[in-house]
Length: 391
Image (tube, rainbow, N blue to C red; front, side, top):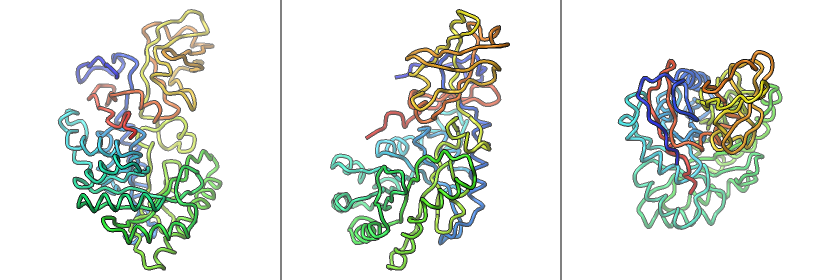
């Protein structure tokens, strides 16, 4: 567990104890506005005639950030998560954000949640139906045995569960494989007591495609079976109220596809270097603040942030604002900065640096708290309630 030194509200950000996960609220708000305004003004041909944003909040895990997302234009009013434990954590935290953050963010219940992952075991299903008695809860399914188990548990508890059929759009991490399979499973859900068929969802997977035409073509290719499934279901007399797809990678493409009703964008409020290559209009709001602890030779400096605080499994973080300095390698506890040119005379012990994570979710999962900063001043310590909520 992280044991931060809690400094006073209003403290300069550069004086925070390190290593620390810092979020610039001004940049975060700008990112949210850019994506929500782009999607909120689009017409995807849904029954309501407009596409909404359902933030997938597992990547930041922070209820205070959720409040900004839910307050933005074009929000569905609900969120998506990966696990039941995350759903429980966000539902419990929603009412407490105003008390915890010194009114630094909007506040309110988080009471409309889609669990995009599977809920399979009997113990988890029991928790699921209990939560469904308190909030608006939906879950994704991709096999009939799970549908039967959910139906039996919902009936026994006197609860009603919303259900979406998950389709594989090429990522290979679950979901039914064909239009026909999706129709059959949707019919099974529609006929199951205690369950309400709401629609279909998918995740296309990471799309690290920098060429715009290629990204659009690949997005359309992956999502066409999902759109075909909506048509097949409606021809079979099954109402489809939700078609949930997309991500930060392709949000502005997905929201223009006729038949999509909501976009499950995730990393956009805080961003990371992995996604910024594709979406340069969204700026990094999250960084790991670190302290230089050694400058043993002209060409090297060492900081107090390593694997345990930056999560560099998919790629190393990027050092901000120092020409000639590059974050090159990390041990468990420390990071190595390679220096050349003017940087060899900079970055001395006690200096602070910002490291932008390559992959946001892996980095955030190292912390119990986000240090929320506005105009260079600390405005609050926000708990990462989703951290470790895997079951």
